[in-house]
Image (cartoon, rainbow, N blue to C red; front, side, top):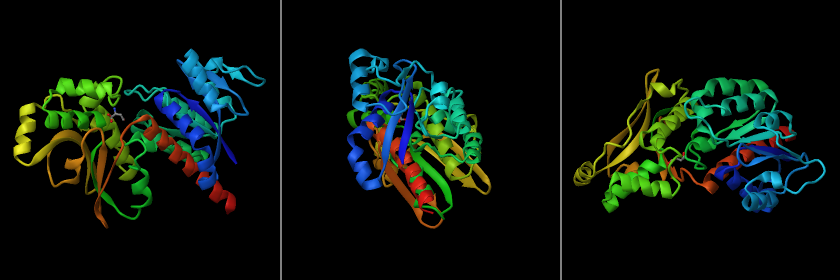
Amino acid sequence: MTHKLALIGFGNVGQGFAEILRDKKEFLYETEELTTKIVAIADINKGSIYHPDGLDISTVLDVLEGTGTIENYPACEGLMTGWNSLKTIQETNADTIIEVSFTDVNTGQPAIDYCKAAFNSGKNVVMTNKGPVALAFKELMELARRKGVYWGFEGTVMSGTPALRMPVTTLAGNEITEIRGILNGTTNYILTKMEEDGISFKEALKQAQELGYAEADPTNDIEGYDARYKIVILANYLMGANLNVKDVICKGITNLTLKEIETAKMERKRWKLLAKATKRGEQICASIAPEKVELLDPLASISGAVNAVTYECDLLGPVTLSGAGAGKRETGFSLLIDLISIHRQTLSNHNR
Ligand code: HSE
């Protein structure tokens, strides 16, 4: 079976994903028997195209690079242009929606409505948008289950590093009693640079922006809001919590001084912006705050834009996972692994 995909949004991550599908086409077939077709792409700035038989990825990328809009894709019979995101979700022949559009971080919209429209049309969704997962997890998960479709969101926490998939698969059977993580690359980069190079917060933030780690509005990174979304996703998905983003105590790193960073060094400690979720009895509390971490703690050695998370497991003890937290290919991969999961499920249902 060929998976037919519609991409909602075609920024860095969407393009990264398309490139992976193009570049690894043979490998994915040989190793997973996975075949895909991108049938539609809808992007608010770059235009919208749909062909029920599939689009040529290289042509789409070339046309976009050359003209700034995908609507200059060579005209051919059956090609449709100008469909908006909702129409693309509801009316194309895609079976899986790759949702990588811009999300309002306060409301999670329009991506929440896109997910609902897809589920109600019997379509799977895989996404990297944190908003819907952090703000409407229960409602969307229930709807996806009711409609018998797959909802994948590996890329919302630590990009393609399996922060969600590893605990639910290979740590299954453990109760996770605490999650502690460095879930934001920008702030970890800033703290690393302040400590290692002695540069100011402002200078380090400028570098993080130039390197493309920071969100469009870096307030979300430096004030801890991005990490707060991620800890809510982890706690709700992995610990069965029912946390609201607004209930999570959140303190960023804007007030940390070079002097405090130097002092921690002398104490054989290191400042990290820690995202934590802790189970006490039936209660789960979460917080985001800078903390001085002992150098022996695995999280202390995580430097630069790398992310890491420690799961405290009742059977296995602490398990720490580290890896990329952002990036075009790394986040593109998160969409691929969700798609591979859909494919494996389809195959196993088929073989039953
Ligand atoms: N701005 C985020 C970070 C990108 O710095 O980690 C990934 O969510």
